[in-house]
Length: 511
Image 1 (cartoon, rainbow, N blue to C red):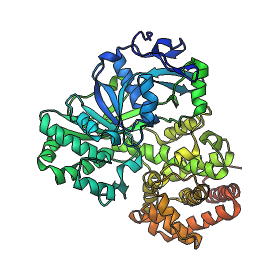
Image 2: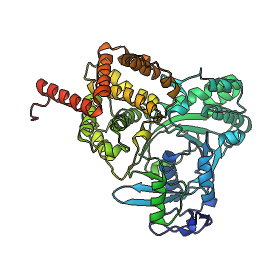
Image 3: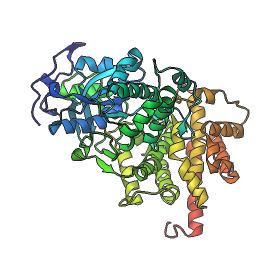
Image 4: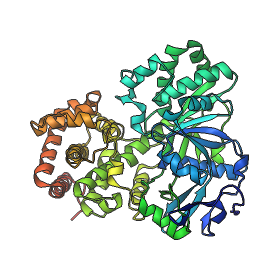
């Protein structure tokens, strides 16, 4: 990779050199393209760590191949914090790939960052600009305002956008306002809008929310959008921990660069994209992404296996008092529980796409989570858990009950999650959009708490919530965890499962 010879100026911060392409050391890979020649054809909502460790890296690779129209303008829907960190660095940042050895790379794909609340019209102008050919999003589950897996049109925030799009709050409002302008000013232009979040059929959700607002503000723009705008989904996969001072110090120590906003990630990266672009399509397939006609099997696989296991481990890890996922998996009982849950409860009930083997996928997931160089915090994984478990656990539980197969591990998982929410509230560390609902639950008794917590997760939309045997088991396990502690309760559970499987002959060779 060639050295960077343009773009950027050296700055001083706390007496140390701030990230500058003129001073990047030889042990850091850098971009070799002319950033001044790159225009922003991509607008991305949610300029956090995951985007900068995943999609922006694919874009950077694409720009290295000589493309010039696929630079990124990021949009923050809330805080100016990321822009304030990146702007003094010319929107450059360091990616630390944490494998057996750490590899560093400076990413130059981001050209600018807008803070939506500070200038909503600028964001809508960008959506309306014909040069914008792709809009993507990583705004987490809560950014879609979902209830029971669909857009909650009764949400007060969405209701304000029905009244006016002058100052949108949601991604739907910004997209609708921008599309109305695009229809009025550039009706011949095409546009693709792509969801990159861990939710099922995210493209359809974006479409539902945007069309709902267009129908109420401009019917002509709605009819135009149905012909000229496509909404697609993608499956994204790469573990990227939260950035902290430890990472900043590591980057400075190894590279000599004081980066205000570095990101870290595992070596593995995957991007499966629904191939339904309305206009120009970035050639992401030339840099490792995969285009497919049907994204749903890939979404279901990741949610049902990898994401489900991540939430499982983080829940148990928090209850054990562990900080990081890999630390939790060093506990033999947790490791065994995760493997058995995946093989006994997930594998028989969660499908994988053609060409994939579920057992091999499980092995890969386990190895990735064990990466000791990747400090992924249990509480970070546990963020927004009331929304996540609806996507990651509930569909598989329903399928298992439908097939009359074992649900024991999920019963214990739900019980552990109940106690996790209680403990996180007690310690004031629960980060969840439904936090106020959890706080309002009457502490009259454990059974009532379980019923109330599950109701907050919209359990009424799933069959297992009406299954007396399942709910009774959850209650029993929750009581065990509360009374005996997670270690004893987990050990007892595993012993019971082993005895049961030996009796049934499942593991007749196990001693």
